[in-house]
Length: 303
Image 1 (cartoon, rainbow, N blue to C red):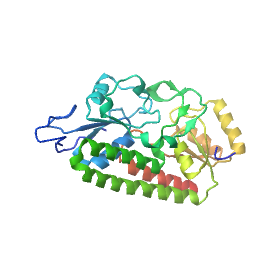
Image 2 (image 1 turned 45 degrees about the vertical axis):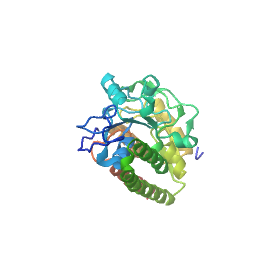
Image 3 (image 1 turned 120 degrees about the vertical axis):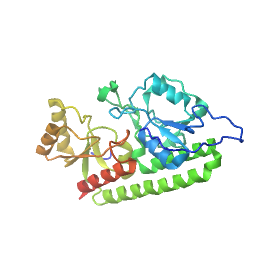
Image 4 (image 1 turned 180 degrees about the vertical axis):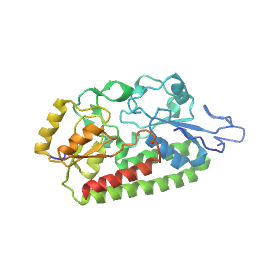
């Protein structure tokens, strides 16, 4: 069946009004305006667009999934005192349901394309990392994996920066245009790769690739496995049943699976490849370099 880091850089003080205007909340003459985001893609987009006019902070630890991370009191205070807070929308960052943020300084970057959200009708409760049990039921939130939606996130960031600091509208527009070109080139290359074998069966270790699947009409089925956990015998049996109807030779993972898991997959004729969602800051490189690596690994599968 188918289709189914905190960055610290020199910044210039931005005036929000006349020459006698006071720094906004979270802003000092020493460090300039501060923008907080709820995930790494938004941080990267804001850095590309804002350049050295803003300092962009994303306080989630590198070993946690920001979608299910709960910030401590210090991190919450940072969000509440920031000059601008950028949200992903689509039910991302579950802690937002129990924390009050200043609405006048908070921007939902997905507000303009809610009609493009994907909804998961049923899901199994599970856990990964220290975030505790959760389910992927409801609105799926890895929206940026569709590069054309990533452009819309970036456009909303550009508009929010320009509204708050209008003296630098031209600079923000230039930053956005450069980022938009990169994202649309990523989109072009992904479409070109998939076009080489449009019906190729793929597996995914986790239901996080819905927007990627829809954008490129991938022939992909997802299970609910974790890179750092060994699948149970029941999970292996479920996979073998799935392979009977969907004989995939490649399985996308959000991170490197355990060596034992990879070996057993290969014994079944399935090669694991990492397609990093990049929700958190990478250990090296940046958002576009991670996506370039994803491209090359996916290109290998489609050869």
